[in-house]
Length: 220
Image 1 (cartoon, one colour):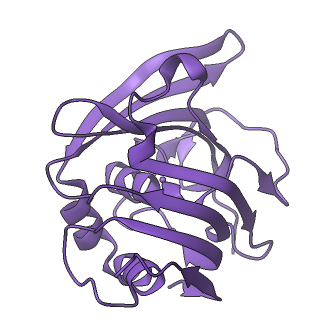
Image 2 (image 1 turned 180 degrees about the horizontal axis):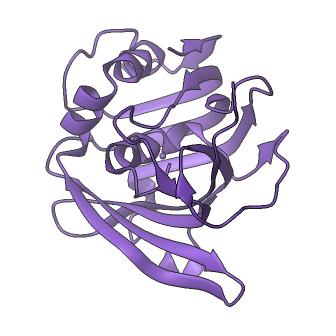
């Protein structure tokens, strides 16, 4: 369970990878909170095989210029920073300046395409999926984080979808984003998820490349 350590909102105001489908929605809707650079994050050798795992977020970047969305003004994120808790690989502190000019409701959809790294480079589209109803899925999958977002952006007044437009300065927002408990094993490797939020007109609103390492679970 995360907590928030402080934020500011203006007066106009009243995302690991696709192999974990439910978490992909969380990753996307937390895009307003994440950064293009991680701190306290050192790479380690990734073995082959499949088994009990842990997930380490390596990077979270806006998609390259050639893949940028047509209407980024609908969801604009600036000055993003993220720090991982050195004692908990799933706990992160986020800072960002957020401006969402449209309500996020279930008329949107989330598109995820996953690539896998090898000695030959990225193998594209090893997994693809489309997640409808992103707001409702987010709320049902992580009601605790949905409440945090409501507290942070809307003073706790939003208890259901849609998420209204908002402009906010997110400061020291702490959240714990564990993989789904029903996923016991995954293939080890480095994966890149291209995550897009698409509006009812099939136009991209926001796009991020998320790189994660799937590593063997450490012994307790």
